[in-house]
Image (cartoon, rainbow, N blue to C red; front, top):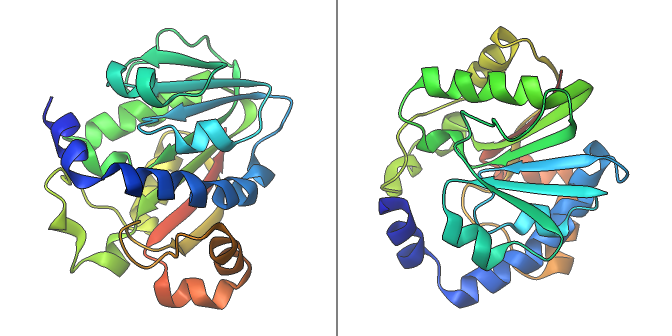
Length: 216
């Protein structure tokens, strides 16, 4: 699989370990959107940094790469090998929170993205949250295609429109949240990440990924 080889070359073991460390404070920030007594699904879980660090009664990691799930998912995480456009193993209205990070820029078409949105809407309980962390092309256009596997582009306004067209009520909109890539911008020391997350004016200087939180 092309994506598997790309990620193998893109991140060293040291970089993956650093990512795992700075995802901890990020997850503590995002915890406000995730009920600890609920069911949380990480869509396109990849290295499982989010699902391993978030607090939730039940955790589900979904990815098309079985090897990635086997290697990175923590004990107690239910792993499902599936496309984000077809979540047949997840019953209707059974999930409290769905998280997707740096996922939709890899899709082949906006029709596929909409299909994924509809599947997320289906599996969420009424009032459940869809948390999307996504590169915002408005703020990273010069570097966006530095990554070979980037296909589609989105701004926060376009993504809001897409989510609403699939039935979601978009509440939280942060056009500039995290830096564009873990390879630069965001300090790797957890205490520095915590400081970054507390100082919102810095987001407007360094942030190039949007954070959207939508409700079913």
